[in-house]
Length: 172
Ligand code: GNR
Ligand code: NI
Image 1 (tube, rainbow, N blue to C red):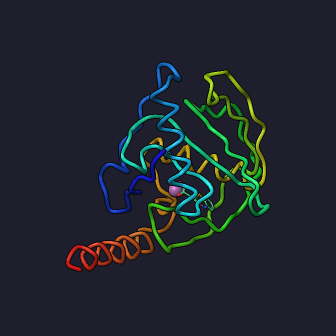
Image 2: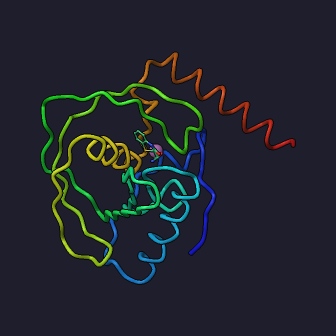
């Protein structure tokens, strides 16, 4: 297992559409292990493979609240089967958009079909934070970030801030 570098906006890789996985094998499981370790070390609750530069349709997540109790979840080739017309608002953040937060509306519930860590087909009925997080992560698979739902002005201000931050860290 290894902690990988998380890509941050602006980065064209984050805009790539990720490719479906043919088979959940050793390589994919190793990737999921690395993603989980990377996510925990960054204290995130979810991570898509593209955030560490790998354009595969793989997501890891852990939304457990209890300190020290790990509940890792793995989603390979997730597909949304059903979205509730009712929307819910959450304050979202993203490890690829550091220190920026915004309230985002998304369907409050959804059903997602996916393959688990062992390649077994699963269906989850998600609501609350799980529903929000799955949809946030599935956006990453399409090259979409939560800031894309903001006004052009808000989005460009955030991207400008992050570009400056990158320039500063590059010269340090
Ligand atoms: O750590 C994260 N927290 C979070 C909070 C609200 C809505 C979505 C998220 S996902 C984010 C980690 C991340 O960037 N995943 O792609
Ligand atoms: Ni994110």
